[in-house]
Image (cartoon, rainbow, N blue to C red; front, top):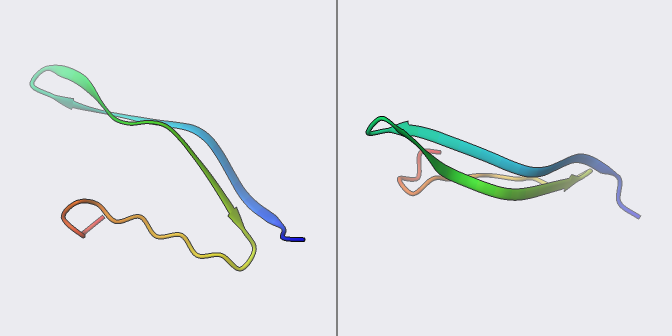
Length: 47
C-alpha cells in the first residue's frame, strides 16, 4: 500500500491581463505518493 504524501484539491489560479482577472487553472486535483515524481511543464517548456 502506498503512502500519500501530498493531497491538493481544487487548485485555482487566475491571471490579471487586459484589466480583468482570467482563469488559468480551474479545479485541478493532485495526489502524490511516496516514491512518485511529479513534473509540471508549461506550453513553452519552461514551466
